[in-house]
Length: 308
Image 1 (cartoon, rainbow, N blue to C red):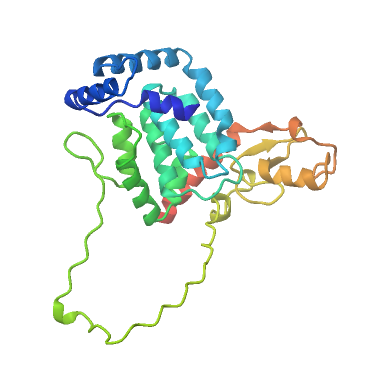
Image 2 (cartoon, rainbow, N blue to C red; image 1 turned 90 degrees about the vertical axis):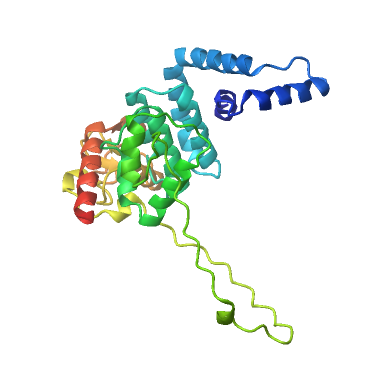
């Protein structure tokens, strides 16, 4: 559904001559009725207006679908489609923060530069500037290669970007440059210098033996944010595993757990609190937004100290 809406709302980046040629080709192919460029733009604007009326319900529905799209290969296309949709039907800041929270809840897979760039594009199109949120924390922890890839993918993204203050602020976060019109500049790789002919090795006289087949190796999994940051205050750590809280839930007895860790513990000992031994179900636990905000603030301060 989101892919279809994103495709329908993508602005047509063609001039009148190109569009007229396409209309003539469709008419020759027997199309019932080809739209003019102006009609296509008006249809897109009408669809965007209709969706804007129901934007809050639409984005809450998509936020609920986030957990199902974070664990498979469709994550990148889903986030790109959401960023494209946000260009025409933006979220309010509160809903955008909730969408980002859904993306980073639990033990998420490692975040690559392309996926981070899609979330940055989404934030830009929703006029959401960098603040104390998990996306900023993840960018602070990202290595130089990941941030460079995120900047490159953002500049070349198929999702259109709004020209606003949020674009400038996120460009500063990524260390990206803007042109005179305020658009992101892609960072092109520096070409290697050509070697002189005399520096090239001589060609072998006989046929070269085939090279040995490389052995496939699995890349090492990147540690999660909870595994990377150590030394958090005790009140910001899970009562079960002692690591930083990213998706905290509070039990009726007052214990605070990382939700994913509690789910695993309840799977081992159903209906029993892993700390107190009292009866407990996941449904009886409430997410603790205040602790999550404190943890996010601590992450930002800790990463600033590490980089300083």
